[in-house]
Image (cartoon, rainbow, N blue to C red; front, side, top):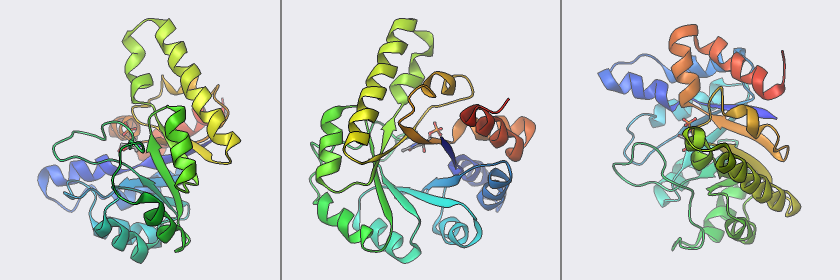
Length: 241
Ligand code: PXP
């Protein structure tokens, strides 16, 4: 199992003061030195944290895989085609949301995503879609040509206060969807709201190949540094004592 570290919230801190630091590029390098297998960033339409400058520098500087989270818009497709990140995860975006709300509902999207995806794949970019843990969404992801899904773990992450039984049910549902995706030949990523505690139980879902984690790592990094915060998560995910 691998870890891709989402560095958006280093940029959130930078933008809080409109300064040129802390720089998400440094965070990415520290994350790699801490053992991250990849770096993820979300270039939002409103550019509230990550900027095009960050994306352009990161693709040249990092040694691991760069995943760009983006809304399926024409302007983002143009940027992606120019910068060519290793992977793209398509996510829904709405103005005013604090963070991504839910997976992309593939049963409802109006855009011609099949064509959109095939044009980006032709550029050599690996295409994934952020979806809720729902087998119908997996079927649709396969139909439109996705190469991986990222299972939205928001519900699972929010269950920490609730009864243990709900937590188990949610893990079972995530495992069911992960298995269905693997049977169809898709790789399975998972993320959103994962932290140093709730990651443990999800490690039982062995179909998941990559975890995408940001906020918990950035929060821990304030106290122990980015390299160590990443390394602590890497050790949990890879089962290193
Ligand atoms: N996956 C997706 C699609 C996201 O939008 C985010 C948040 O940017 C994450 C994973 C990481 O979530 P968190 O910051 O809660 O770890």
